[in-house]
Image 1 (cartoon, rainbow, N blue to C red):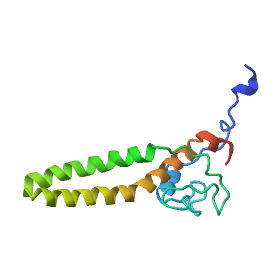
Image 2 (cartoon, rainbow, N blue to C red; image 1 turned 45 degrees about the horizontal axis):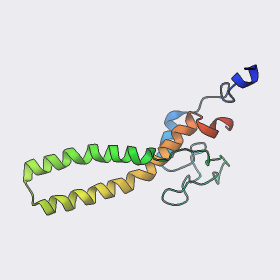
Image 3 (spheres, rainbow, N blue to C red; image 1 turned 30 degrees about the horizontal axis):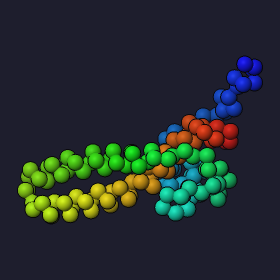
Image 4 (cartoon, helix red, strand yellow; image 1 turned 180 degrees about the vertical axis):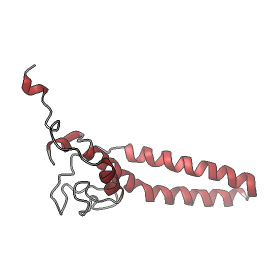
Length: 134
């Protein structure tokens, strides 16, 4: 291997703030500038930031946001379901209705935010194609 193949393009680049990029991603904004929208529809990511020009098409969020959303919703709703059942013993249909609406609503709220945070994480860690740009 040559010296050229061992060099990584982002080794000497300045660090990117993990906290800022995660919060910007959670707000569904560009992880670089925090002003431009990251998503152009519910889950479709813009190719570039309309404000700073940061390329966003490098992301590889794939199924990660869905897994994280299921993990969070499950860990929040399962204990709530148990507590509600033990404490009040509601009718099964009532319990099902309340918790199914809660699960769907929480999932719809969290999914785009998890996707934004995951893209922000990838940007901060210079994963994929994010390592070659500032």
